[in-house]
Length: 268
Image 1 (cartoon, rainbow, N blue to C red):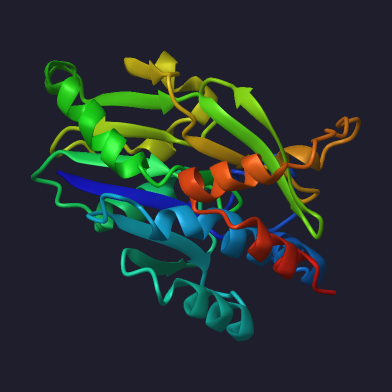
Image 2: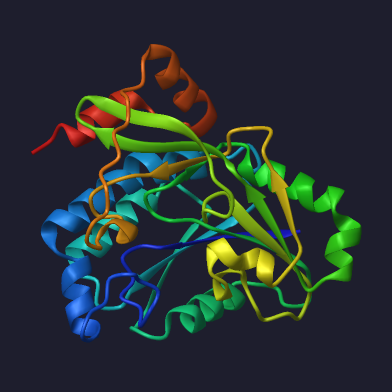
């Protein structure tokens, strides 16, 4: 079965952000501001990509949506990061309605005659290296359910919230349902709706969902540039620094290397 992962990398969509902007130009200026985009690149390199590149089941497509107006040096930097990941494909689009553009990009990459498994992924989050393997197994286990419904959601709700720093990785365990990371859907042939047509915390209102809690499957990235942290009165989150055992677990489960995190985030 085809598996498609979908990631937006600072795409200036119309809608889709909790932070509002007057127009597409203002949004692009916010997204590509040097301090912000540097932080996104560092998290993308050290947190997001390692687990994608190390999947135990490599048979999937990883779409990375960017804006057509992304500055050339940023686009070149993104291409260099993704070059070692054969599953990755950069897709550039002009600004447009968030859900519509995401739907079109995913469906353009699909074989609409066949069922599809799709997962959403933010550029500062991570999934376990077994995620695609577990997703295929979940779909097989729920075959009767996926045959009976146009869409069926899958949600792994146990993982970590983590902040990469020059000191290492600050993190603590989390069990949070429908958080939008390690979340997927099985979609029947011919159905044009995608997982990105639904708010991640509300998919259970629109489709049957299956939740897994028995293993840690995600790292939810925490940083000052999270869209959800740009509103007023958002309280800071204090995260403890991982010890050597925690760093070893992150390396084994998510392919996240704390030494690489220290090197990248220790740069000016």
